Image 1 (tube, rainbow, N blue to C red):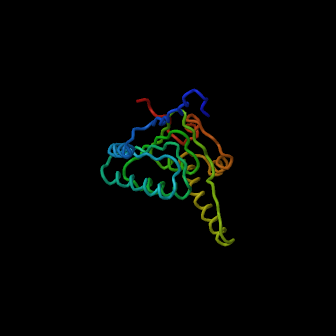
Image 2: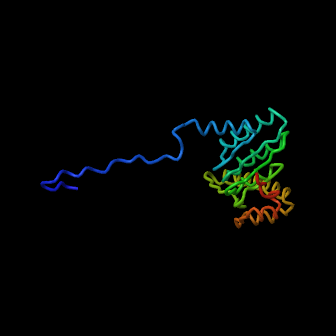
Image 3: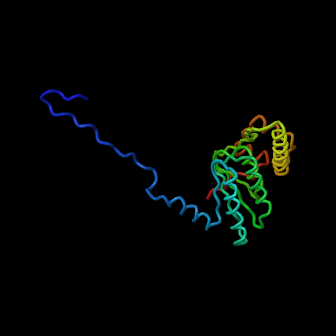
Length: 202
């Protein structure tokens, strides 16, 4: 604003630093993960790609080798690439100790298969499950596209077979639900056979 003759110039408003929700400690989240790990709790959240799946598998295998005690797997707002989900499912199949999975937020697409591979499956209130087909994007020659499509079809079959074996439903029914993007509440998922029920109140 221009100065008015005979009056002192108006000072600009002070610069206010935005408040931060987290303390200024870069290692704090790592410490939380370490404490959870010490208690045999593994947290998976966000988009699970191949790199994240490798890390998750390493954590599960490490805990499995340490002690013969159950592992608690927290799936919070998790989605997953198809290949990454199948990788984790394969590791869950060979663990010696039981895995108790707890779902929160929205668990969508192939990530539902990770939940299905756990020996015990629970969900927090207001959790939503989305049965949906994975997003796919192909580039390349006609031959490579055909080969890729066959591979994806085989992986989808493996995913739907696992869900069918856990829920007791027909593969075609699960495939149809995934194609139309069916949502399940906690009660719906319990009736569907996907989970054993809601998480118990502490």
